[in-house]
Image (cartoon, rainbow, N blue to C red; front, side, top):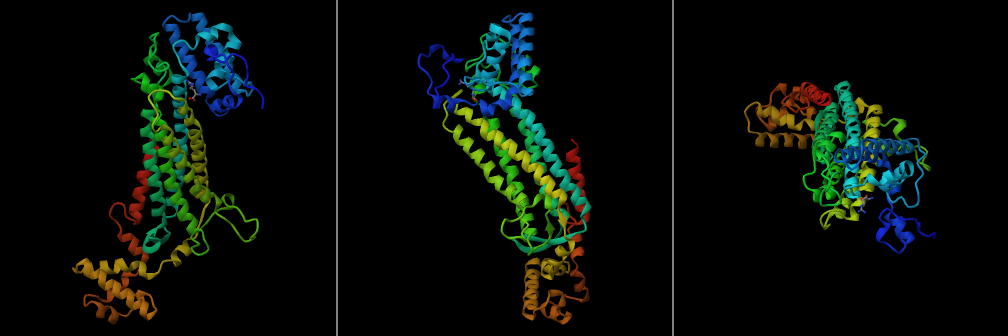
Length: 463
Ligand code: ARG
């Protein structure tokens, strides 16, 4: 094991002993927080400007400092930034490099600022950018579901409760039910933004900024909607991360439900859909296999993202006020969730876009018993109470079962033996298309109501 670096650390003034090498590595976050390099520079440029306004920097110093910060930023962008052993995190790395480029003037940048308000600012800025990307990924998934629904309104399949055949529904209705969950996720994501978009910078280490920097101007400069009203809160609040992780977990719950349905529907036993080769994989042993790995991973990632959320909540639990190093543990779960969620949304979009749908298999799965509710409703329309008609219909199902036939194969005499109100027109009930078309109240599976949902979702995608 090599020794920890011996050079003066940023905070080394009061130290005489060396850091244990394992501790040095343990403490270092640069390997993952370097992805915030651009927002860290943005925050520093804004801060430099605010220091000029309160007389800490002259205009020339500010210009030199901004030029230096931009040069550091460019090194990151060009992939030529050389991290040093002593760079504890992205903040120390950027400041160290700034001072190498512009000299001792670099040492003025951190006046009144702490890494505590700096890191909180960086994560918020970083996440705000990511939220925009997430939003567009989510919209793309909703769009593909809506487009498919619009193109495939003709397919009817059994709708299931308890995974038992229940009533006929349109395939489009099912797709739109997924889209609706994701539309609500889109709303919820937008509702998070005002709570992410709060400026901590100018909170200092914990007590506030003694040089009276104009925080409202800083917020404006950095595009924040508001300013943290309490410095203790400003350096410590990570609720916006917890919320984002909770939000992602919920998205993944929706994702896993859709994945689970499609996994079942893609089995040979159901055969309603076939996944495209692009989103399937084979088995190393069984040559015939085509596995829905994409969907299984979508389902599996739900557990991982929930884990990130639950783990981070445990990190927050019981922390004393203001900044504690535990909070450095916010980044890995956040980055992991953002990365995996983005992959999941894109994969789901691809899976849905390329799926083959087998309308005839869906049709073949429709047995007459899924019209038993419609049979009961037939008598309801003749004035018989539903509780009674439910029984009559149940007896018709039992009779057909005993005769080993479908309920529509019972004779009129059979029906009349079950209830005197049955007449010849009973056979019109046994029509799947008519059944779905009767569900014409808002939210139903009729064509008109499916079209209504499509319009609602399309307009949600517009804004
Ligand atoms: N790397 C740290 C983090 O991510 C930055 C803040 C460090 N602050 C401190 N007082 N040690 O939380």
